[in-house]
Amino acid sequence: MKLESVKVVLPSRKVSNEDIIELIGKHSIATFEGNLDKTLDNILFYLKYSGSQNRNWLGDGETPIGLLTQAVNQALAEANCDNSDIDLLIYTGIDRGFIEPGGSYMVAHSLGMKEVHCFDILDACMSWTRAIYIIYTLLQTGAYKRALVVNSEFNLRDDGYVYPKVFSLTNEEQINWSFPGYTLGEAATATVISYDPNNPWEFNFRSRTDLADLCTVPLESYQKYYSSNSPKVGLDGFNRFTSFGNDLHLNASQELKVVLEQLKTPLDEVKIVFPHASSKKAWDDVAEICGIKHLMWHIYPTCGNLVSASVPGGMATAIQQGKVQRGDRIVGWVGSAGMSFCSYSFIY
Image (cartoon, rainbow, N blue to C red; front, side, top):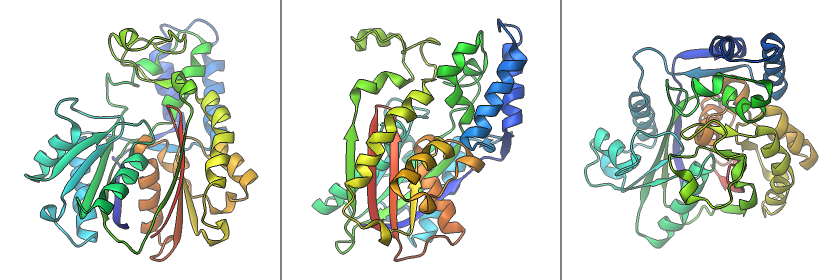
């Protein structure tokens, strides 16, 4: 399988850590019980400690479909193809404008891709990686020749899953399940993949469903679809992002080591490693233990956590900056809500 192109388009509004603190203060001043200034200082400290600096959110007049269209057009141009050459379109990720019939169909409709086959993959931050794996298996059947994977991770829009509710604190304890929301950035990505029998990929997945309650966006009536009654789910109500970031990273460390050790590719042949952009510090800590810290490519400091767009966003920026050339061995390394973990490798 060949990765023909991968492109990322970021929105124009740059948001610093200090901007995040200002927004939390604005939305918490009337509700917070305790020392708000001290709490804000603590949040800023942990943002910097994690490696966070900036992230981009939608600016005035910008829309997810507008930025996604830019990403798709750029990806198609680099792959030297057009809409008619794509026979499968997969929409991945958390953010979406449609549940029915699915984001993929509405994106295809918007792009004028009349007869392309469509479906969505929703697997938290693993969504893009899971889609690539599914495409890899489908291409080998001969059912498709070229696929387009897209995502529009714009989760900070007003009255969405994160903003402003997660920015409105009533007490310091809420930081335990709200902090990851302050690290989020936004982006659209588009990836063109084609069949290449001479370029095998390797994937290694692991799951820990006992940790499923650590990062959730529960829907209305979610209690009827879930029997565990975990106290971690729905702490801020339904349609709200709840994420115990520290617990996620602590539990991920060992699992990430395991999937990395499962790679058959010798690590001394690897040019670059693309992690999920949930924290620079946490990923570097695991990478250092595994002896690959020098290979890590981080977009978290400048782009924030791009959710399912983190790995394709990282690849796109590295390629654009000349850090990756054709023939280089690449590794993807992802930990996701669920929880799920994956290492994968291929030749670019």
